[in-house]
Image 1 (cartoon, helix red, strand yellow):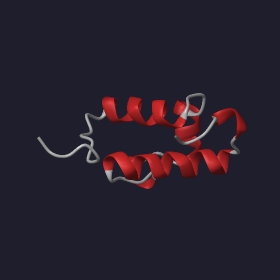
Image 2 (image 1 turned 120 degrees about the vertical axis):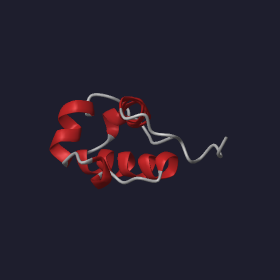
Image 3 (image 1 turned 90 degrees about the vertical axis):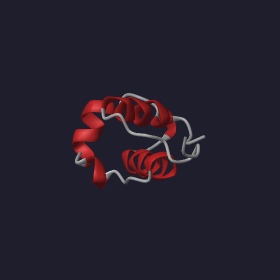
Image 4 (image 1 turned 90 degrees about the horizontal axis):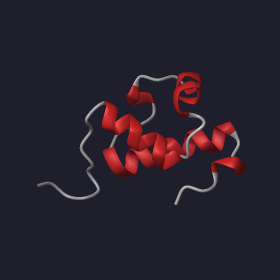
Length: 69
């Protein structure tokens, strides 16, 4: 959905991460507490959705795009 990471610049990748975080968890990349460089260092080798899901699992975030249970 967010494109092939291999074809993205760092700026495009980070923008896609931010969009994915907002769409699924209503938080921004800034809200994560990670700087751009920290995010890239920890998750930059992963596709956008995989990186966001790993981050969300680590911090037990609840998805907001699937409704409330």
